[in-house]
Length: 271
View 1 (cartoon, one colour):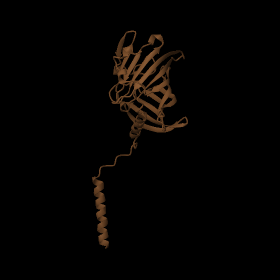
View 2 (cartoon, helix red, strand yellow):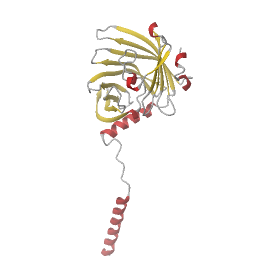
View 3 (cartoon, one colour):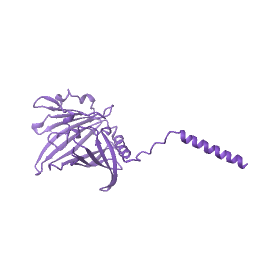
View 4 (cartoon, helix red, strand yellow):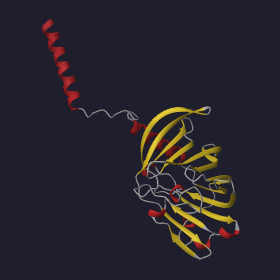
């Protein structure tokens, strides 16, 4: 009896050993490394933001120099989701008179560099913004051209750093590195709250890895009971002392916008 029991136990152990040896390795739990945690946060943020369709909004831009002197601009913004990933955006200046009619069209891509075109009404000319120039200032603001498109997940690699309090909330702190070698940034550090995945602060580091700019976001409001949009974005340049404040209002979602409204040839007809 004991010999039979021993043989049975031995047989079961042998079977278990064989199964373990020939089974595929169990996947590592998501978020087990800082890199996995970082990419998971980025992907979750993208999924949460999907499905809005399109929107229009009014935007005011306040530019301040290091002495506090201001200049103001008024814009209209249109954004549409695309099936292939990467939104299309259109920024049109209405005031002041010297920039009225100037328009920036952005076609964001998941992996390759964004396509960007600037229409200059005084010259009646559409100018393509090359990838090497997208690190330049957008219309004299502290926002670069590369800041104006959608921050697609595939454009970066990620590393989770820590959780920490941010006001009354708890934020994840994630470092991301642009994959575009022509980016004006070596890395960015992003603070997002853990509940709604809203970005509250971004540190930008230049090609010398110096802390170049800080973006803070505020006055969030939820639309369609799902999509959070910041009502105010402030970009401060720590090297020049200049800053730019973008204020958003009059959001309208799921309008009659079509992709044909976001073409290079249509830029000259923008009103």
